Length: 137
Image 1: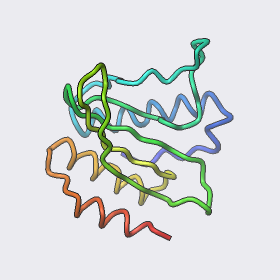
Image 2 (image 1 turned 90 degrees about the vertical axis):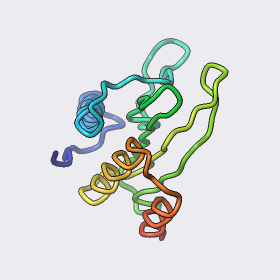
Image 3 (image 1 turned 180 degrees about the horizontal axis):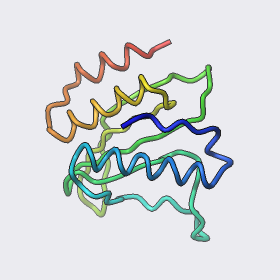
């Protein structure tokens, strides 16, 4: 799949919706799974939070998930950072691969590799470290 080329998404509900669809399609094509959110990403009044954190979130298994945080292009932020986060969902331990990125063709390629490795349960700390070091400024 080609990287979705859109302008600003935080101030454009249509661009934001297009990015959500882009990540859903990417996730499904990589894992064969339908998106299954595990976080309510809305304000107390029910209005969706459209800040890119997260732009996409889905379970892979009952105790593992993927969270993608997407930022608008900003030279002051790293282009990509990833980590494994341990949390609790519904009183049960839950692990998620978190990927924070500014979307371009290179970070998209790294992200799809991370998702595949994590879904196949072969992502190692050494691989994560190598990718993160590549993008440290």
